Amino acid sequence: MRGGDLLHGVDGAFTLVRCACGMVYLNPMPDNAELARYYPDDYCPHRERKMDPSLKKHRAWKVFILRWYYGCPVDGPAPPRFLRLLARPVLFWLSLSTLKSMIPYHGAGRIVDVGCGNGGWLLRLKNCGWDVHGVEIDGPAAAAAGAAGVPCVRGTLHDAHFADGSFDVVRLHYVFEHLVNPGETLDEIRRILKPGGRCYIRIPNIDSLTFRLFGRHWFPLDIPRHVFHYTPRTFMRLAGQHGLAVTRVHAHSPPSGFFTSLDYARRAGAVPRWLAWVREDCAFCRNLWRPAGWLVDRCGKGDIVEYTLTPAATAFDISGTK
Image (tube, rainbow, N blue to C red; front, top):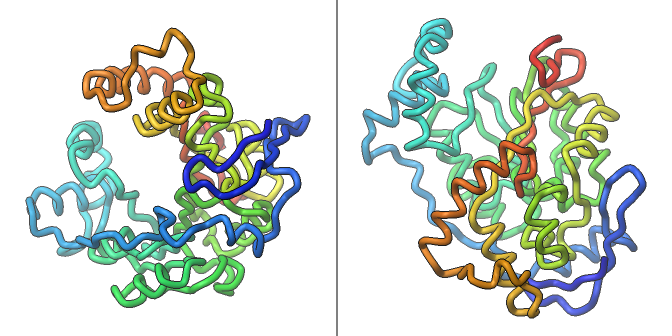
């Protein structure tokens, strides 16, 4: 497949190839210096975003969810685990209304976010009891994180030179697909994770329904910044080759994936005839997508997949057996 940059209009056409194993990647593969030229100054994840780490609004409710559902030691230690497990079936539904970007507190709560941007998400975790660290390749974004009180290394995860077994949690949120050295990065994650630690990696799924519908106009394709594209099978195989086992796979199809892809296709005159009636700016259409997207996710064909990984020696497979 050949395609161009539909988001920022970088000059040139780029080629994607599919390996016999199912992996899709840019060919020729750019090096880091070339790849840096494809990120304009106004690249969305690097823009300055408002930080609001406080819990002032509905504080009591948020603290209750943080302590009883996520196990965070905010305003005191979290309740005992067995009590939280008993309350979990009810608290799960309550948690859907707020603080959805949180993750369960784990170990001593030491976390590194690779590609942390301006540190806004880490700052919220810091105020909930986490020991936070960031890694960010963009200079202004890394400086903003440091100014906000988030320790941040400018560069790659390898540049940070963290000690062996130094983190309970490693997170890469829409970062892994940008890496030209994914295997080496997984090795580094495996090295810095504590025994029993967790890694959360969120990436696009090229086996998704919307990729099949829109092809080169699929929004998460983001040529040429996304250099590798994974299916669940290819990602889990790669992770296993580098000492990490996937314990959970969670698909998510936000409306932006479908409707931005539809917009790209419409501009190119390539919208399937049966989708021509759907409008990107129609609230009814967007609300109609939500149950459809939920069903697509349940079938494993969602746009975005978040993988939870652990070091293989202490991993559980997806069925829950050791």
